[in-house]
Image (cartoon, rainbow, N blue to C red):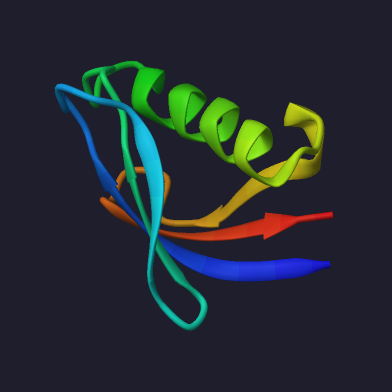
Length: 73
């Protein structure tokens, strides 16, 4: 099980995952932070980056914040 912090940048021109420090990532998503669309894009990008299914990526804390605690099973 992997747990780490993620800083999310919604409304970004390009999508991507970059590592900031040990145990912290920055994820840029096209989606706006409305109706959970940015969270859905975040889960899709992290699943692709770590080569796991979307159901294995969970947001533990920070559902409505830019800083989120993520768990990958």
